[in-house]
Each structure stands twice: as C-alpha cells, then as structure tokens.
Length: 193
Image 1 (cartoon, rainbow, N blue to C red):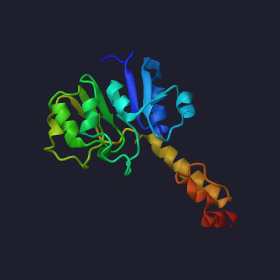
Image 2: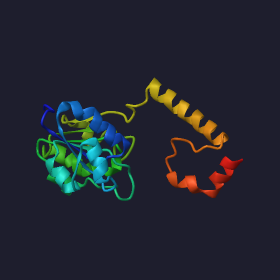
Image 3: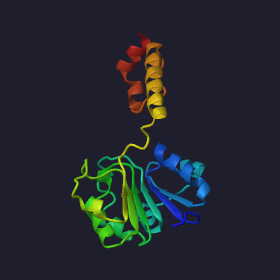
Image 4: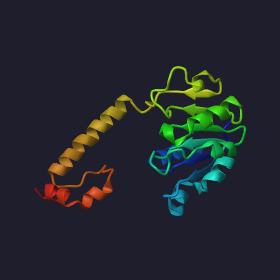
C-alpha cells in the first residue's frame, strides 16, 4: 500500500508521537491523533488534527500506538475499537503490549478483518513460541529494540553524566522525567549543598 494520501493516526502524541509525525511528513499523509493531554495548540504546532479515539480508529489507514501504558490505556485498543478499523488498515504497536487486547487483534487478523499488523511488543513478553500471531502471514513482529544503537548508548551515558554534574553544581538536570520532584524539599536541599 502506498503512503501518499493515506491517513496516519497516532494514539498518543508525546515525544515519540511527535517524532513519528515529523518522520512521516514527507510522505504527504493526513495526520490525526488521539491524545487527551495534547492541547489544540500543540497539535497545530506539529500539523496534526486532534480527533476522538473512535474517529481515529475508523479513519486511519495506519493506527500507530504510541501512548504510555497506565490504567487509562490498558486494554484501550479492544475488540470494539479494532472492529471500527477499515478492512484495509494496519495496526502498529511499538508502545506497550497490554494497550492492545492481543486476543482481539489476533482474531481480527485471522479473519482478515484488518489488513495487517506490525508489532514489537506483546501482551505477554516474551511471546510464546506457539502464539497464533507468529503463524499469521499478515503480521510483522520484531524485538522492542530499534533504538539500541551506539548513538543511543552514547547519548544515554552523556545525559547521565551531565545530570550528575548539574546536581553536583546545584542545578536542575535537563532531563527530569518526574517534573513534580523539582519542587521537592529533599531535592532543593541537595541542590543547596
């Protein structure tokens, strides 16, 4: 299937989702996203149309799961939502396996209800050798390790060292994931020392 003129729908538009849209931009696709935490201004900045999840599932030629796994997203892509997809659509999950109800996806693929899937995460990991997904000809599976390159390891090491130096110098590190900790009295005391 060609990409030009198709619709790319991302479930989740955090850092990875934004990068995916940037990478796909040259293909001339329509970009839509479902992410209840993204503001219209953030979506507009990336050139993406925010939609509700059911609209995304019905509309996208490629449904890509990019959201984190948490209680809100566990089982988010279930049989009902997979049933909304076009018969020509593909589901791609590179986020976390339990976001997609794997049994429902397997049944949709076995029955040719959707065109195919690309998966590098599974509900149970490692995936069992006798899992029916592995015998289907409309599924591509890969290990969840595409980013493990020399550059990635070098960047991780550099970021870690810079963070240690920042804290030792009394500064907030650049790459704090849990931003609430910045206001913590313990961290403030450590930075003051």
